Image (cartoon, helix red, strand yellow):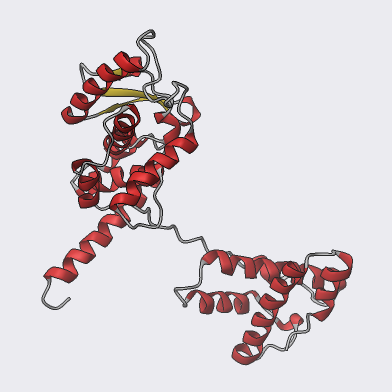
Length: 297
C-alpha cells in the first residue's frame, strides 16, 4: 500500500489545515492507495504512473452517481500529495502532471410542465388588487419573454411598445435587445397600465412598470417571493425561481419548433453553446414519448 502518513502529518502540523480538510485528503489517498494495490499491483508512490491515475478516474466515473466535481477533488488531493513527494525526493516525477481532470456534467435546466403553466394562468390565483394584478403580469412577462430578473425590475413604461408588441431590455454587459410578445400579453399589459396609471403612479410617463405596494422600485428578493408563491400552487419541481421560468420559456419554445438561434437572440445569450443545453430537455421529452408509444420500448 502507498505510504502517505507523512503527508497527512505535513497537512496537520505544518499547513495546519482543518480536521475536515485533512479527513478529506486522507479518504481520497486511502481510496487511491487501495485501488492501486488491489487492481494495479502498485505498492509505492514511486511506482505510480499517469496511466494508473487515469485508470482510477475511469473506474470512478463508471458509477453514474459519482459527480465529476467529486472526482476532481480527489485528483486535487493526489496532485498535492505528489507535489509533496517530489519536493521530498521520494518520487522522480509527478504522475499527475499528465492527467486531465474530467469536465463537470452540465445539469439539465429545471422547467415547469406546460400544463402547469396553463393552470397558473387559467386558475383564479391572483387577487383583484394592485399586488395581485402586478404578480400576474410579472409571471406573464417572465413566461412570454424569457427575460432575466434583473431585466424585469428595470423595465420602464417607455420600454414597452404596445404598437408592435415588443419590450426593450438592457441585458448583461449593457447589451440592449428588443423582445417580441404575443397579442394576449399586449391586451393584459393594456389593462394593467390603465389600472396602474389610475391607482399607482399617474404622474410620470416613464415609470418602472413593477413597483412595491408603497410605490418603490421592485427589488429581487420580492420577485423571488412572488414567483415561489405562485409556482408552489401549481408544481412540485425542486426549484421555483424566476430563472426556472426563463428555462421554461426556452424549453417550451424549442419543443414547439422554435429555431435555436432565435431563442439565443431572445434570451440574450452571447454564444449558441449556452442555448444548446435546452436541446437536452427536448431529447428527454422524445425519449419519454418513445417509451410510451413504441411497443418494444
